[in-house]
Each structure stands twice: as structure tokens, then as C-alpha cells.
Amino acid sequence: MSRVLSYEEKDTWIHRLSGVTKLLFFLLWSITSMISYDTRVLLVMLVCSLIIFAMSKTKWKQVGTVFKFIMFFLVINLIAIFFFSPGQGTKIYGTETPIVHLFGHYTLTKEQLFYEFNVMVKYLTVIPAVFMFIVATNPSELAASLNRVGVSYKIGYSVAIALRYIPDVQDDFAKIKHAQEARGIEMSGKAKLGDRIKNVAAIIFPLVFSSMDRIDVVSNAMELRGFGKHKKRTWYMGKPLAAADYAVLIVTAAFSAVALMITFSNGSRFYNPFV
Image (cartoon, rainbow, N blue to C red; front, side, top):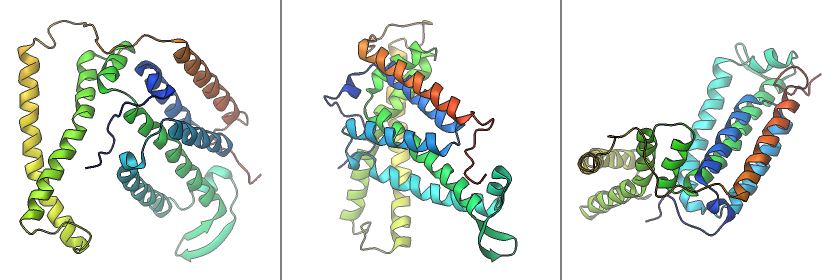
């Protein structure tokens, strides 16, 4: 079974970076993308994200399914933006260039399309960084990284365990699915969409129960080992910062600073091509 969003050890410069570096890169990259609505900045960030994602050698089967779900909800989000606020682009850019009148007070304008294009690019800019961060960072090292930036080691461990057990949950899902198919319950593309959704939904309850059993086993094991007794702890998977880590952090911080300077150069975080 192909696993999605699971860590795989690879010999790339991204995998060799410290978890702290990858975490800080992800935070700076996401914050810059969220703040900026400058199309020029966002497009450059999108290209950089795709290049970094390709350099991480992440396989499509690791992220393809999740990416399809994200794109589906992105399209729904863009439709909802237009439905609830069809004039948002006009308010932001101060002009109105109608393309076609749909119905009622819904008129599609160039300003609205440009605004929603920027929203889409913002999402696409962050998605490759998220995937790269998850599949290129050892969960145990991630816990150490979170603790080094000030997050409680208990929270760090919770996040790390959640990521570590994603493959196990996927394996459980596959086993239950195969067992159901062996009983004659069709879950492949041969069945109707409604039947497939119904049959797959039936897997949720046994999957939840098996996950609950695993949680109980892990929590008991951690309690027996005295987890949480002390305020601080040492880390076996902690990795010190090397020259490459400092270089990545400096370049990322400089890029974010320049990107925000360009974004606010006209007194607004929106790039306006209509003036």
C-alpha cells in the first residue's frame, strides 16, 4: 500500500537539514504568504516552492491523494468567496471592470477574478512547503525542534506521535478495506459513487476503535516510563545546526524581509494592476 504524508529517509540536502531549520523555514514561508497579496511576490514564492519540493524528491504517491482533496476544498472555497462577496475585488482595487452579468447582483469582474487568483496562489504557495516539511522531517526530530523553539516537549511529542502513526492508521484502513472486499463489499471504482462512500464510511468505526486501542497502549507505556515528570528533557534525535542550516535561515529571513518590503511598498499589501 502506498502511504501518504509519511516520512521517508532520503539522501538530499533538505533531509540533512536540522528539524529546527525546516520548522522555521516553514513558519517564515507561511507567514509571508499569508500576509502578502502581491501577485509578483506570490508567483515567485510559488516557483520557489515547486523547485524546493522537486529537490526534496517527494514522490507523488505520498501526497497525491491529499493534494486532490485540498484542491477540491480550494475550489469550493473560491466559489464560496464569490457567492458571499462577489464585489470583494472591486472594494479592494477600487475599480470595476465587468466581464459578464450572471444573475441578480452577481456580476463577474476582472477585479474579482484577480483577487480570487491571488487567494488560489497563496494556497498553492504554502501546500508544497507543507508537504515537504512533513515528508522530509523525522517525527522524533520534529518533537526536538518544537521544543527548541519554545514549545512544551509534551506538545511536541503529541505532534510527533500523531505523524508517526499516520502510516499505521493507513495500514489499518487497508486491512479493514481488504477484509470488507473479501466479504463481497465493493469499494473500487466499479461501484457507484454513493455505494463507495457508504461502504468506505462503514470502515470509520472499526478504524476509530483500533486507533483508540493503540492510544491506550502508547499512553500506558509512556506513563510507566515516567513521561512528563520533569519540566525539561534531553533529545536523542536532536540535531545541531550546521553551516547549511544557518545559510538556509539567513536566505529565508532575507527573502521574507524583501518580499514584505515589496508587498507594502505602495502602502497596501495588495498589488493593484488596475490603476
